[in-house]
Image (cartoon, rainbow, N blue to C red; front, side, top):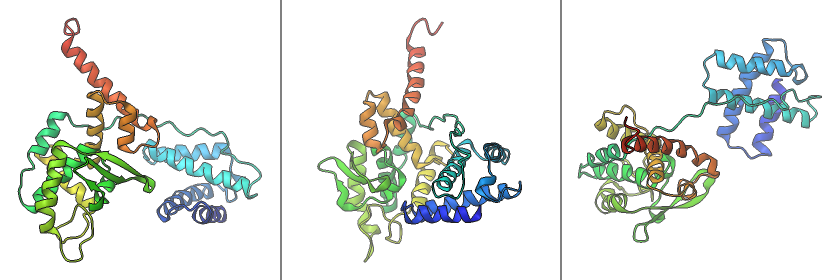
Length: 296
C-alpha cells in the first residue's frame, strides 16, 4: 500500500503537475489511510474492499474530523484506488461508485450593512498605517476580494480613474473588479499619503505594504481586519466575512447572480448560489417587518 501511495504521489507531481502543497496534503491524508488499513491487516490495494473504506470514513468521523475534511479525505482515497486500477496495481477499484459523504450546507457569516458602516467609519486614524488599514478594509468589502487577491495586488493593476482593479485570483486567472465610492476614495488617499510613507528603497510594487516596506502578508491583513472587528465587539473577524458581506449586500440590492459570480471570480455559479439562501433570510425578515398580517 505504501508503494502504491508513493507512485500515486509521483503521478500527481509529475504528470498532473499538482502543486507541492497539494502533493504534501494528499501524502498526509494517504499515509493516514495506509496506517488505518495496516491496522486491519490490509497491506496491498487488493486487500481493500468497500466495507473497509466505509470503516475508514466512520473512523474519521469518530476522530472528530469535520464533514468537509471527511469528504476531502474520502475523495483522495477514491483517487488513489482509481489510479491503482488504471496502473495495474489492483484488479478492482473498491471505491468505484462509492458516494462521497454529504457535507451540511453552511451559510457564510455576514455583517449587516449597518455593522460594516460602523466598522469602516471607526477606521479614522490619519497615520500611514491607519490609512492603509482603512483602505484595506474598504477594498475587501467594496470589491469583494479574497485576502490573497488583496495582498497580491500591485500598483499597475489599480485603475481608479477608470473605476476598476485587475485582480489575479485562483489559478492565476485574472478578472476585473469594479471599485467606486468610499473604497475608491480610501484607496486613493492611502496611495497618495500613506503608502509613500511606508515604502522603502527596494520596496515591491505591492499596493499594501507593511511597516518595513515589504508586501503585506495574508496573516497581517487578517490581523488588521480582526483588530477592526473588535471595534464592533466581533471576535476574530475574518477578511472572508467582508467578502461574504459584499456579495450578500449586492444580492439584497438587486444585483444579478451572474454579475456577482463574475465579480467574485467564481468558476461556477453554483458556488455563488449559496448567497441566495442568505438573501432568502433577508426577504423573510423584510416580509415579517412589512406585511400587516405577518405581524399578527
